[in-house]
Image 1: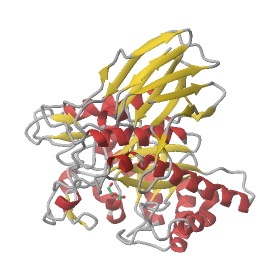
Image 2: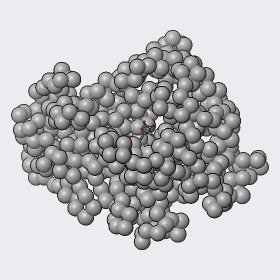
Image 3: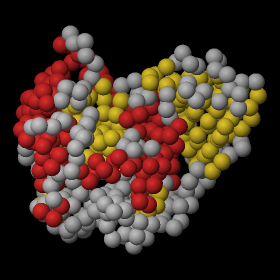
Length: 496
Ligand code: AHR
């Protein structure tokens, strides 16, 4: 198959916000206990955090981590998680029907984030709690000193404020499963007043309003328009959540799921702009895709997990090669919308639907999806350029027009590099002609590919067989580049 892609520096989508490569740690399953934190593990540091996990997180270059939930946050009392560890209460976590020991809380997680070089994206509880607990948490974390909550923080060992910039106004409040689930009108009002109070404590923070839990929610659309209409002037971002899966074992359709993500984002942007127009507002609301990933492998297993355990194995999807290809397509789609999607969080980071897994008595290891995420997070910096692509398309049961090539270019002016991320969705090799009108390509620094694996093959502890390898299948002549993209492959072409 032949494909032509032309890239020009004038076709700018937008400046990529580093927070597009965020992730998520929720107090659930083995994400915290047995994941990032395991004091009896041989690699644990003096605070009980596993250093093998930290190393893998650092390599991913995650700049922002959403915390502490997810559904968990809607029943969480943040005050339980600060102060002397031995005195912290053990609580029922109703969201995941587990036991929460509060051994890791705000201070411990902030210290861990500092070690891995990430900021916290803090979610407040708008399920069982509300404005008062939220504004107190902002005061505790961000107010310098001399008030009740800031002095409590100092007494608990943190003199300088945590200076948390990004805050989520609850989690999936449209979902009937959410503790303290609300109608759009109820949530819109509460979010508006909570954001107002939080910003009165610290006017430098940015807040994320809950959009729909997924695009198939019966209230999708109506929810966005109602909550935006209510809270528009107090908020900065609207959230989107979506998980994908190959439940019908239909590879072509599964690889096309990013078309759904593309349409979802465009629809939500349109709704933000409709409310902007209605209000004659000067303010633009951008998007925070603060939960996205593949989630379906573990669903059946999770029905059998006994309730009221500490850190039970939940949502432990083992990702295969086709999942890595889909994840690549989803990453490219986020980049295509980087003018409006400023924050995104791969949900999640460790053990729970995660790129990183841990063995209790052994090592931490990388799932298949770890690699495309790492490559895009480290190399996808700068300006996203919209390429013009000519390639055949196919149709599936759900999608009418799916291009065999999914691709984006990123220009890093600081490093003078142009990086192309590409997925060949087809089952034959693709000859990709790259044309660079106003960009000068001197050399190919690196062409890496993930291809040729059995589509259902997975990585395991001690056997990370699925990973990128270097390819020489390209020809570079007089500003023209031809690359051979293997059938069903994830490709990164780095040029300067
Ligand atoms: O990421 C797992 C769960 O998915 C989160 O707790 C919730 O927000 C979503 O439904």
